[in-house]
Length: 163
Picture 1 (tube, rainbow, N blue to C red):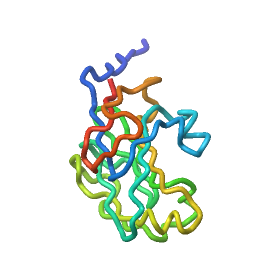
Picture 2 (picture 1 turned 135 degrees about the vertical axis):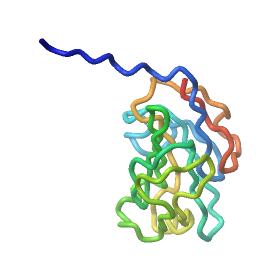
Picture 3 (picture 1 turned 120 degrees about the vertical axis):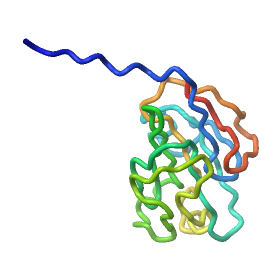
Picture 4 (picture 1 turned 180 degrees about the vertical axis):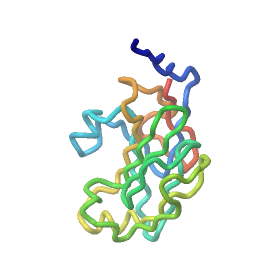
């Protein structure tokens, strides 16, 4: 006799995703990287961070558990969903230089908790884009934007809702 397991029900409440850094909102399609621009890993928005020098904090966009943590990117799992924050483009090539991890994989975080400290100006000075995609991993085809591209946001401001 085979046993069947019910599939997990999709979450019914929207997950509000907050800005992980201060800056200007960009449409994901405007990110200068084909994987993010094509929403190949999921929908979302991006933020062009302020580039005025010095280390800044990248904060948790949702309350949940740090599922993956790299110096240049992190994933927070919440309510059966996962949100990716990528700190700059091609920053994996920096091998962690210029990034300081504040939490560890498996840690529980609340919205606004510091996850990584980094320097967008140093990323830009090294010839890389400091743009930060914020992605609903394997999410729906679109998310409900809370702010329009071109708007200024402060870390912790609502960015989009994952319905």
